[in-house]
Each structure stands twice: as structure tokens, then as C-alpha cells.
Picture 1 (spheres, one colour):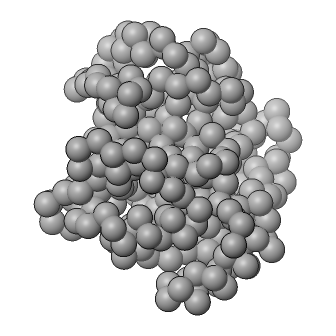
Picture 2 (cartoon, helix red, strand yellow):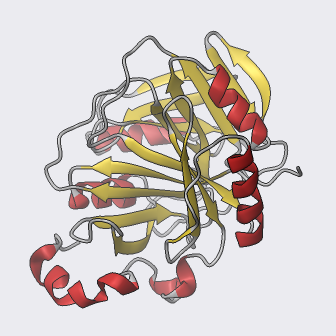
Length: 307
């Protein structure tokens, strides 16, 4: 099987405040809100998307903000660090920016030979900026200059009780082991969209309990529906319980739970976020799935927190 996966497509997290998420990712991290819609299964809850100018796959972090939700309990079977790529030499500027915005508990280290700045998100989730030579075009309309603006995802780290079964799944998807550092295994796609790294760390913690700050799922990108269908068939033959394809308006998605407990999604690149909004006005209007359009008056009249 030729390599079907192109890298991370998006990462979706749970949150406790729509306004808190929106402020953090647009005003502090300088990302663009590329879509304001609702959770397909809970239309009283936003689904907010943030990324580069067009929300290119490999750049988008999304959130389900359940207002007032309790924080999750960190543990195994979850994404433990979501890392973004920033230009070489930019971490000092980011540290100053975070301190100016009262972001506390900053921590710098060198991870697999790259300078990294770890910081908490709005619900205490662990996020990171990693200095790397990344040619992807950034969004600069959010108050962060191009010489330090986020390029997209660098990597995700999965915290697991046993890395071997998940490593086998990633190998099936086209990843190869490229490095080890202590108890952490790095797996990389030979050809990728810029977001081609998954790190696997072993932990003795109990299973995570999801809540605000928890990553709900990590999605991997494929070129089109045909590739997705072929991959679904191959995953099913390999014994994975994969859902049918679901139309999420901006991509089609299939889901399966990995042996380590992390929920994986395979998402198509098309149609993208410009399917229902002009590129110059992405993320401005409330866009509702067709089945929830009848709720517009209630949602816009106070059912959702104004952003």
C-alpha cells in the first residue's frame, strides 16, 4: 500500500469557555479563526476552528467549548502535547509575548535536538512551540509578525501505557521510527504536509479522564474520498473498528480507537473551509450544518455565547 496519510489534518480539544478559547488562539497565538460552527452531535456547543489563512490541513486546531466544563485528568491514552512550528530563533520573542499576556508556567527545553517552549492553554492543556525550518506560509493578520508567526503543527505527542501497539498502527499508516530519546519514540512520515511527526511516550499514569483541556481526537489527512475509502477497507481488514465516512461539511471523516486508547480520525483535505465562506471572511458568520439550520434563530439569539 502506498503512503495514504499526508500528516496531521487537525487536532480537536474540549474546552470550558468559547470566549476563552477564541481569545487565546487569536489574540495570544495569532491564529485565524477560520470557521465558527457547532458540534454536529450537540448543536448548543460551538465547534471553533483556528489555523493559517485558509485553514490548510496540518495547521488547524479545533475546540468543542462546553461552557463551565470541569477539567480533564491527565493520564495515558491521550494526546499529551500539541506542538506548533515556529521560525528558528523566535522562542525568545514568544516568551516575551506570553509573559506580556500573563501566560504562566513557561518551560523551555531541547526535544529531539530542537528548541521547544512549553506553555499551558486556556484549560491547562500542554501546548508547545518548536523552532524549525518550516516553509509553510503563516497567518499574519492576528498581530504576530511573519518572523515568529506559527506555521502549523509540528507534532503531537501521545502518552501511552505501551507504545508498541500504537507504533504498529502508525507504521500501517506510513510512519517510520526515526529517533528515540529516553522513553519517547519519534515516528515520522517520509513525505508530509509539514505536520508529519508523532511522538509516543510511555507513562505509568492511569487512563486519562476527558474534560476541558483534553484532546478529543487527532485527525490525519488524506487527499480525497477514494484514498479514504481504500484506507478504511485496509484498516477494517487489519481488525480496526472503523466508522463509515461522515460528512463534516469541510471534510469527510472516519474514526477508530487505537489500542492505546487515543481516538484517531482520517479526514479528507477537500472541500475545505472556503466551501461556504469567502476567503476574506472566514470564521466571521455562524455556519450551521444543514440538519441544524432550523436552530439558527435560537442559537444566534442567546443559545450560544456571542464571539
